[in-house]
Length: 415
Image (cartoon, rainbow, N blue to C red):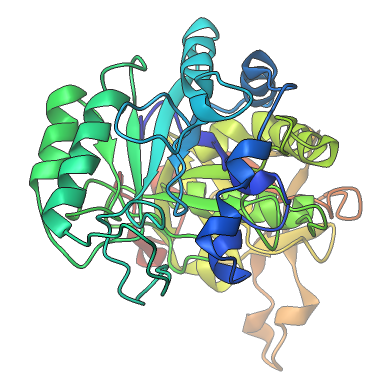
């Protein structure tokens, strides 16, 4: 997964789509359980078309889909036999997860499953007014950690045996309890699966969310995530959508550091991915396909690169420079280079750039020896590319000898 499938589409979908407020509507809007559960009787996504969903992801060049099987509200998006609070008891009545997994298999796209540890519905879950927990005692509540874990294990058995090959499992909100038996069960049911670090033990990979990473690489496996919506992950009627520049820059930063990335959309109550969301995914996908070779290259650490606002990835004798901010001019220079690259190309649009030795006036500090020759790379259409992350491809005869060795910190593969 972390070598061949790198970019995924996250899908947050559930009965919270009915009111279009937020996937944590019950908690953030202080909705009583008896009122919130009425959404189940109103949820009838007659427009749901898993073929279209998978095609949207695949046409954009995405490698897999991560689907929310159960969010914090406890509503189950598959035909579980361990709860009545489920999709097959809605007016729609169909197992949407089964339909999605069948379509993923048909279109040869990976499927990962999200599962929330907090459960505001289940009678045995212990809501203790902690992180993502509701201070509401319902009729029939019988808090019991042991019984709740038994419930979770029963549902894991269903999810990981009835829906084909599952490439990764995304727990959400780490519990206070450590219990390695749950991930052991997952691995026994789906050999080779990857598990994140938000469950009952450390799992296999970290999951930074809606934040920028520092440094040039990660110490271990990582899958970052963000949503096209600034306010929510589920469908929100008045959503503020992120710009293409924000999203491509986030994806570029994390993937250049060796991480996977999942970009979230929130379908509405009828099962439609909003037109704005589809447009964003398509636009991001066009960028991704143009620059993909740089994102699948190996993270490398160059001190000069970070000081000048770049991340770097490498494949053999090709170096990719990832701008951490939009280019502020149509060219840049590299002081530490000893041998000019053979070619320089803007991956975003295929533009060939000029490469030459030059003396840069801004480097002058009053001493003649300061006006040394540096590598000048020129010809970027900065205005045209101002709406997306920019990546420059530099091809060398021998990259290992192209730079002053003192500037190379680490050129080993991180993941």
